[in-house]
Amino acid sequence: MTVIDVQDLTKVYRTGMRKGDIVALDSVSLSIGMGEIFGLLGPNGAGKTTLFKVLLGITQATSGEASLFGRPPSDPKSRLQVGYLPENHRFPFHLTGLGLLEFSARMYGMSQSEIDQRSEELLELVGMARWVDTKISKYSKGMGQRIGLAQAMISDPDVLLLDEPTDGVDPVGKIEIRKVLERIRSDGKSIVLNSHLLSEVESMADRVAILSKGRIIKISSVEDLTSRKSQYDIEADMGSRLIEIPPEIGKVVVVTARGMTVELTKRDNVNYVIDHLRMKKISIYSVTPVKVSLEQSFIETITEDAESQP
Image (cartoon, rainbow, N blue to C red; front, side, top):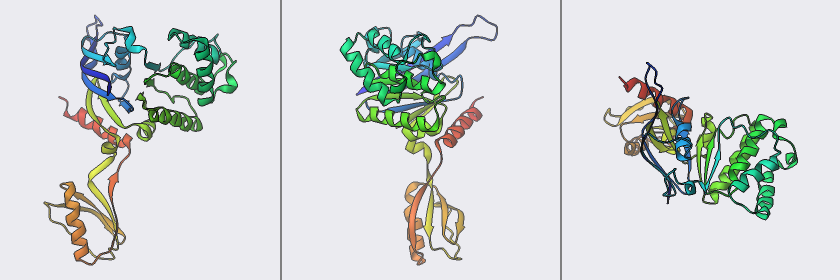
């Protein structure tokens, strides 16, 4: 089931200035399914937060279409199943943590009994039960993120839009928030995650979209982005033997007594290399695709896109 659908979405901010208008989103198209954790990656100004704002009806698109559960952002009912944690949020300082949850719940039309039960569950879940009666003005940045996540979840939404959810959270808190998000996904709900912490996205997301200057330049699974499918590390008893493979198969990148790394022209060619080593009576212990971090893959993608632009 598709819960978010965006087709050829464009958002232009009219500046009226000589330097011209600002294109925040440029023909963006993507779809997100139920139960998926989807990451939005991109440098500052790439359009990630603008996309959230269009989906939530905070700002209107210049052209194109967007929908939440089949309803356009102009329909308030499209947001009934959505929770939102904005970046750099400013919750009313005079409220306590519990007061914020009650305030948010009432906007969803929840009954007092529902509010009491749900608030207790969420405060425990995000590790804020001890601070239930403390005013938000006394919260640290990390505590503010935790209570912000709780308010986004108060209505038990089917989709969470999270803008930098672990910003300012300590390492232990980040692990705890990750567990909360994984639990939400296990319940069949969807999460759209905008974060500059690519290691966090890599550990949680199923797929990501990489944006640059309002354009989507790649949508892919995290697995595909972090795998060098044409490269393999082969652990083998090489000794002092040198191995060569035909150029049409690939090339040997590095070889040591304990193994070798090969770069192949296509994935299936790894079978040729394995057969070649066996013919030479070389014992093979493992064959592993070379992995890179999501951050490295992201930087390479952004750099390649920039170099391809006129």
